[in-house]
Amino acid sequence: MALIALNLKRGSSYVAEAVTKVRLRTGVEGFDDLIAGGIPKGFLVAVVGEPGTGKTVFSIHFAWKGVLDGQKVIYVTTEESRESIISQAAQFGMNFNKAIEEKKMVIIDALLRDKADQWNMVELTVEELLNKIIEAKKYLGYGDARVVIDSMSAFWLDKPAMARKYSYLVKRVLNKWNMTIVATSQYAITTSFGFGFGIEHVADGIIRFKKMIKGWELKRYVIVEKMRQTPHSLRVHEIEIVDGKGMRVKGPVEYTRDEVTLPSKVVEGVKRGLARKALEERLMELD
Ligand SMILES: Nc1ncnc2c1ncn2[C@@H]1O[C@H](COP(=O)(O)OP(=O)(O)O)[C@@H](O)[C@H]1O
Ligand SMILES: [Mg+2]
Image 1 (tube, rainbow, N blue to C red):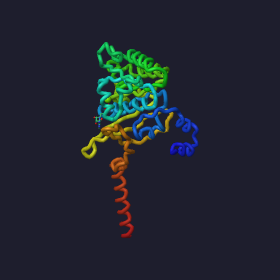
Image 2 (cartoon, protein in one colour; image 1 turned 180 degrees about the horizontal axis):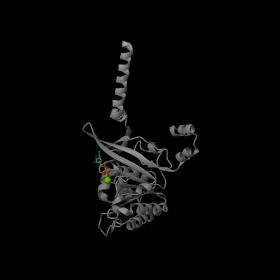
Image 3 (cartoon, helix red, strand yellow; image 1 turned 120 degrees about the horizontal axis):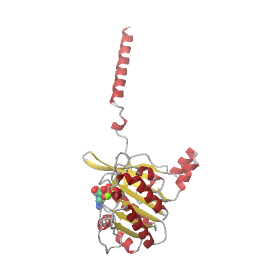
Image 4 (cartoon, protein in one colour; image 1 turned 180 degrees about the vertical axis):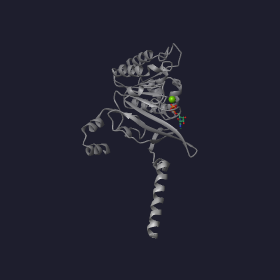
């Protein structure tokens, strides 16, 4: 409702259209409100951040919500084993094993070198990645699918210059199969020269996770840096990861004094101005 009110105020039919798009809920409590209800269907969204910021936990939520919403889910893991993803999910009460048994989910373990396992990968190439995902989709059957690629950067570690071309290829090919993709990347995609350079142009959305130590405590944050066709929040939000539950958005970060304090040069200038004014007033009194 808040969004609709906002649209009326803006008088923009484009914004109204954006809100009515088919959106996939992420399953992260409080997060979908930041992106007008969810990720637009068919998007490729890059989830970026340093290690330990919550990219995999976010991906797990997105995958599980797909199962709950009756979509087919394909989860590609490169940094952790399939078992590790399954037990991480279990800690949040999500039964990935059951979803796999019921043919609602496939976890492709990119590092598994077990030929007997249908969902392993012989080599870490984008071509093989696409082939495996399509094979998984065929196996899971008809319907919309959610794909998680965690992490995407693993596929062009040795060819960073190809990041943009590969991201585009992944998006174009998987779009044809009615897939919505969440792809994680460990690198600062807008600043790093080598890795992921170029993916930010291809991605329809960028969700950045951050961590910081404040008051001797590790805090985690999220910011939606980009989400096409979406009136998304521009604020940094604090998140938390809770045992038994998973990730949750706590709320927007309040502006701290540091942030509202003017640059010291300006402050000095104002002080000098006030001092001069006071001096002038004193002089006038003396007159
Ligand atoms: N059961 C849990 N309870 C609380 N926090 C957890 C739990 N499982 C994982 N975490 C937190 O999540 C972090 C891992 O986040 P993850 O999504 O794997 O990071 P990334 O993928 O960005 O490297 C851990 O370092 C820990 O702080
Ligand atoms: Mg991870």
